[in-house]
Image (tube, rainbow, N blue to C red):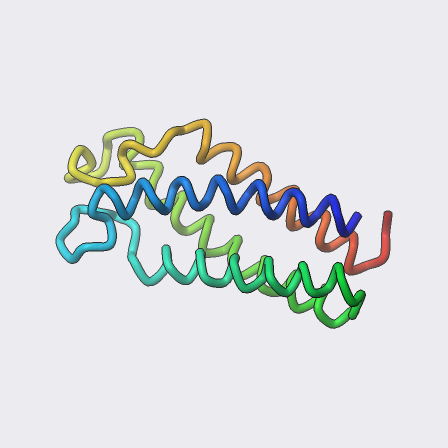
Length: 135
């Protein structure tokens, strides 16, 4: 189960990195860039996810139960930030937000956003199951 969680986390991270790169390239990180996604939330999501992934890799190598629980706790925070960003992205995607056409996240590939979210949920579940020693 630990390896499944690792693979899911890595694939999820690739999708997230694609979205982050597209957002930065579109000017999302610049003040006045037109983004509805707050830069501190975007970068916190990215940095916590990267830190959690590193902790999970260490957990897989040394099998320290505390690291599994710390990774899971980080994933909960990461997921909350992700849900907050999706809630702010949806009106942009639907074109109902003011200034939506100028927002760099307007061009996010919907398939990547959806796959990133689905894989993130699967990652949270497999990390929890691993921490509980189930599977």
